[in-house]
Image (cartoon, rainbow, N blue to C red):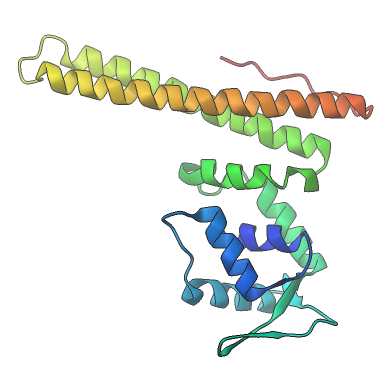
Length: 200
């Protein structure tokens, strides 16, 4: 995720390392924080890979005892950013976090690419809803009439399932709204329209 955050930030222009750290922490906060021991080696790795470079014509600034270097994205970095944005198969268990980060940078993509990501997340939300409903139904069927299941535990477990379903329904409603706005934007610019996928 940090790689996508860094490249996303630099797509908007050069930034000092300390400012990259501050904005990254603002994005992933309030409890999670990226340490300097994680961030600066990653910046060095991205620089070594040719995705970022020391910005030309910029004066490094001193932050305490550290020299704050200014980084900019390279052409290879822009390609890597695009690759990370379009990736929907890595980290499926944490894809919600990645998608929420991607939404702020959808404008960097082509219209059909934006729709592709929105449609993928719609399916992602629907899968969570269907899975949770199925698990809740199976839980009720498996525990019906069983003496070992206290009513309070059964009620509490079903409350959790209901909360999870409502949560993903809210996510689904949000991304459907984003898609509706995107389709309107595409149509207003004369782009080809892609039919909406079936929503449950």
